[in-house]
Length: 137
Ligand SMILES: [Zn+2]
Image 1 (spheres, protein in one colour):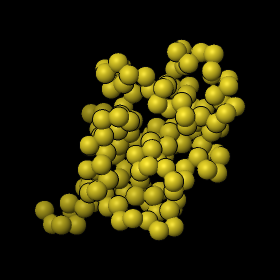
Image 2: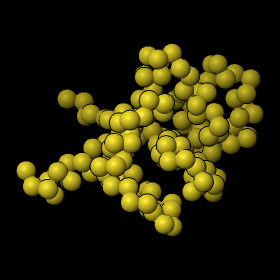
Image 3: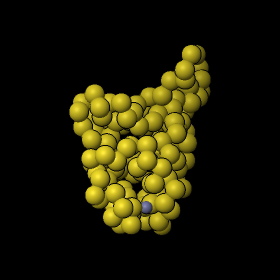
Image 4: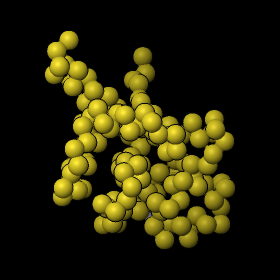
């Protein structure tokens, strides 16, 4: 395998937010995604946070809150930024190459986040539920 094969393989790896891992570790996805909601959506959901389903939260963020100009901004910590990119895309699996190009689009002065670096970051996360996505066989 050549070096460029290895890079292509890495760039093709996809990740997503694994909602199941929140259930498994008995944590609330809603509690983590809450601060990504705009104030209007927070107000709508405030009475029923316990019952808010992850799927409907993600749909709100994708269709409403992520449209705000500062939803993703360079002041956010890197993991938060990645989390929001997934949410704004409805938590569809994103390849490392796509993530890297999203990063370049949001930051004027992109730090060199190669697919290798991104993979290491995503694999080290235990908070946001990032997980490698495998196609159903
Ligand atoms: Zn909203």
